[in-house]
Length: 124
Image (tube, rainbow, N blue to C red; front, side, top):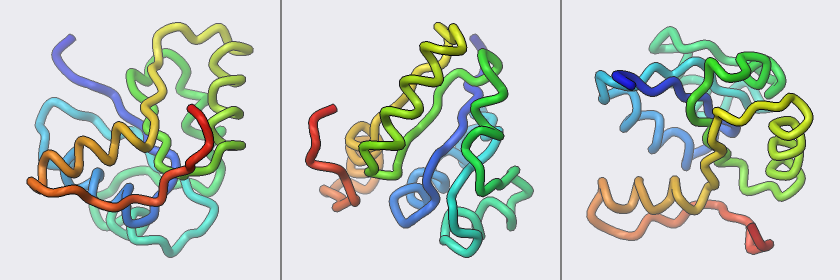
């Protein structure tokens, strides 16, 4: 694998921090970012950088196994369950769903300090 194909669900501050990191990596293709709101920081940044945006996460899920990593930074348990269910029902055994806590770890490591992100306290 020479590149990672990445999609992001959620476009708030956490996603924006992560988006900056992903855009700077020449080995990452960001295929899209989804959020219900069209004016979130992540959506604005994505548009400024010609990254596909959508208000429907299904638009990104439809990429199927073309997507290597799907990053869920919503912090919403219901979204997490919908993503899992979609992967099972679609038979997608390639795409990995990255939980918001892992995204928080990555951003914190890059910044050299703990970054507070909206994370669900519900079990993973």
